[in-house]
Length: 265
Image 1 (cartoon, rainbow, N blue to C red):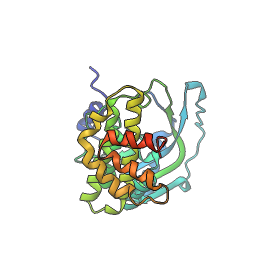
Image 2: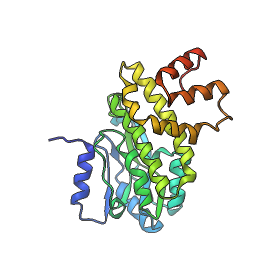
Image 3: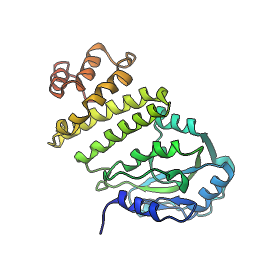
Image 4: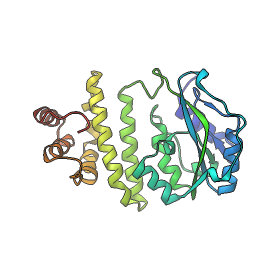
């Protein structure tokens, strides 16, 4: 029976017998050259993970399958482990998180997908980058990502708290492995994501306050590490509102209304 994508991926990892593994979400598509080009890029770059560019589509008729593509090594950009972690944490490139990659199976050593249902790639990517020496990007649209209003990433529920928890896990991993210099950027993203989650819970009549309560300590830390010094983008009033979010959700609501601040400010 269907136990979810996290269980499916863990089952695959437990039974894999090859040196390489690729993942394709069930509602997406790939170019006929997907594995061929990724394998060639991996061999030429010496990378442990290779990620191609992707193309969004809404229905199958929108996909322009270019099966006449030719591989060109100039399409490969190679990052060291530190550079890849920097790209993830400071610039948050979506392609670093999405699953459309070819991996050396060895990077999954000690890594399992958590049973969270959503945001599972957010949970594991920092662990995988820590296990690799090189990460490569292939500037070639080989993966086709289906945009769907009914897709798992579009439907909002309390399960979305998983994204907040994943960033807390990322911060812990960074601190435990001497990547403290990236913690402020991830903390800023954590704080922003938590506020967005809280707002969307209110819009959908869900108890976001209860879901976030166990992580108040992390949210206060996220403010100190990632928000407190952002005087370049926040006024004193805005800074006060952001500070209040990790202290009291009720106080946050009062101050936001008092200062007439829009969400995201």
